Amino acid sequence: MTPSSNLKAFADSITATTSPFRSYLSDLHRQYLPLTDGAVADYIPELALADPSWFGIAAATVDGQVFEVGDCDQTFTVQSISKAFVYGLALEDHGRDYVNSKVGVEPTGEAFNAIVLDEATNRPYNPMVNAGAIATADLIKGKDGTERLKRMLDMFSRYTGRSHDIHVPVFLSEKATGNRNRAIAYLMLNFGMVSDRIDETLDLYFQQCSILVTARDLSLMAATLANGGINPVTGDRALDQRYVQDVVSVMLTCGMYDSSGDWAYRVGMPAKSGVGGGITAVAPGKLGIGTFSPPLDAKGNSVRGIQVCQTLSQDFGLHPFNAAAPPRDLAAWINGSEGTNSW
Ligand code: GLU
Image (tube, rainbow, N blue to C red; front, side, top):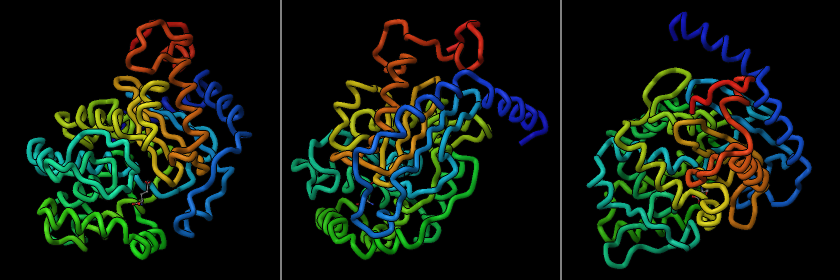
């Protein structure tokens, strides 16, 4: 950061603690903390250790202000949220046509871990289901697994502005129990849809699911997509502008497991969730939202996270197809004035 961007960060941090938007987020946190529906993922023992009361809400604007309430520094594994961002890296590595020839963009209506490929093309349906995510991980360039993982971690760092590690026990558990993912990968290998470094790619996929993030990170990742691929705090480009629309579109159609249609209908913000309890949601041109709360509904989405995103969407008119004036003006709430709406 330059000295002037340090000054700006300092000024923004003052706004972020005094803005009415921060009080609004605190009220949301207070409102939904008592929600105790849902269950923490327990398909591997490490995830079952999560405290169901952990709850963080973070929002980052495209002009680089970050608002955090609750457990926004608590790390957890990114899990399926990684799929959207790794898809962006694959697009950068190979371009749209080649990636489209390996992974489709159709919602499936099937479980995220279904062993199913498009019968006509043998492609996985989309990059957000496991088959598509493994095929996408296969596309990540690098001379070996270490270099490919480093490229992924570096990509996450560009989105979040900090360095990332994987949670090794989660990785080892995912690997030890991942026979279904291995079955999917070998089916794709049988059809020639993935390269024969399949065991290395499976490790890479299990590692990408095990990357540690926070709610703050998820808000910055979404804000970077909302900002055309440039991290609004660091100014670093995380994703080539040409592919932002591709990533955000599949988030909208396929990002929330089997509730993607319901989510598009009620919330509308392109989003991706993971079984670690995170949700990252994009309001293009405005802000990114990151929520963290481990208890999941039957579809695998964080119960509190859904409520937070739905309420934010309704209150500030963040559904992209909502043409009515929203109940609250986002810019005015963030800047603490009823000034001009710059969005
Ligand atoms: N690691 C999980 C798997 O591959 C994905 C978890 C998720 O959907 O968030 O099965």
